[in-house]
Image 1 (cartoon, rainbow, N blue to C red):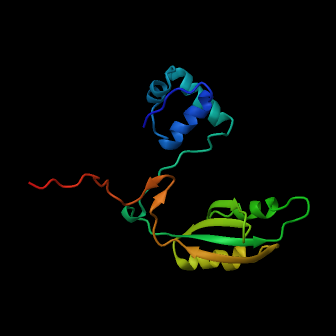
Image 2: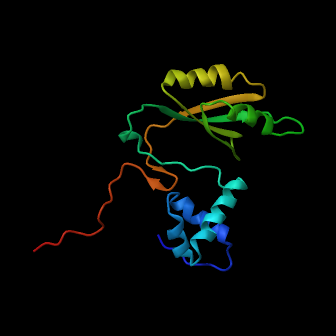
Image 3: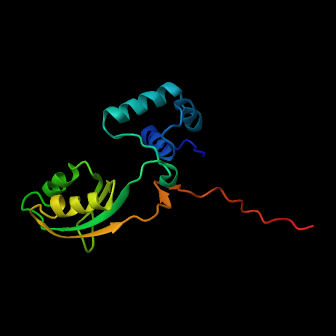
Length: 170
């Protein structure tokens, strides 16, 4: 991973780019890559956190190698927007449920994409039928279960590094 200082981009933008690639990168390494002092990097990160630009840090895990079983699904939701608030009020009601891991306003055939996680398919069904579908302004839902994760946040899952070199024959 290499970065070169770019005078057209702010230090904040450059630090964010490196942290998005590896949130555990030490301040000293970021400073070296950007050609600045480590104290400047630490202060920039603190400011980004204080200003709620950096909202958190997360580990990307391989679900095949963890002991906790769970079911993840994506739910397409068609919504009737509300006068004066559009989709915001219904989105807020949905994202407050603890099962909801992500929620996006979408263009196209549906309005919201809800990503939820539960321990079993029953948990997911209960969420869809008892919580989500009963909310006012929900027109329809379509649920898609995640069967296998290949890549998450730019990181390939469950694939060993493969050599691109061909074997040499004598």
